[in-house]
Length: 140
Image 1: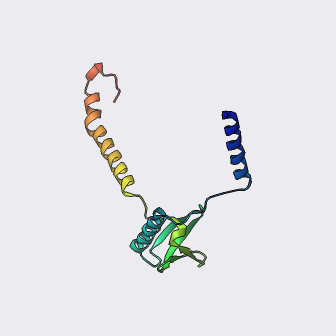
Image 2 (image 1 turned 30 degrees about the horizontal axis):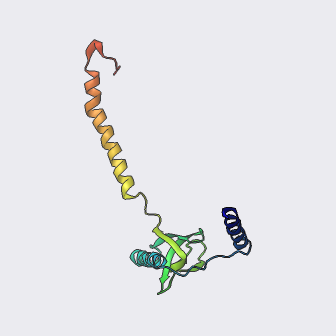
Image 3 (image 1 turned 60 degrees about the horizontal axis):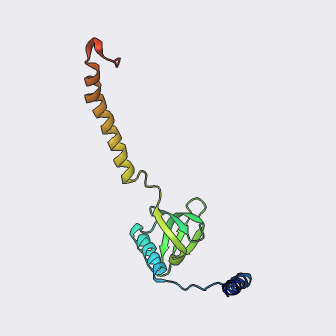
């Protein structure tokens, strides 16, 4: 009995895969929230040649340029080099980030900590190790 049930289930799965049965997905609330985040980010960055962005689309293509227009359902990216424009729907974009801003805040903190660490080593640790006289193990 168990073998027969298992065999029927396996046949059903194979038939479903063979006919390509897939579920159709509607836009979920997560997709809506993601598109609203993209819209808010675009509005925060602003418009014009100084609003340079890198946009990653849901199909994993990347666009670089500046935001030249922002509408209710889409925004326009203009490539500064070629002058070509591309209209991108907010729902089609997975992420928008400002480009060309230099180092991030996290990078500046790490760089500052490295400089402070080097200064502390040079000012405090080196004299402490080099004042050992003839018995020192560290040549200064």
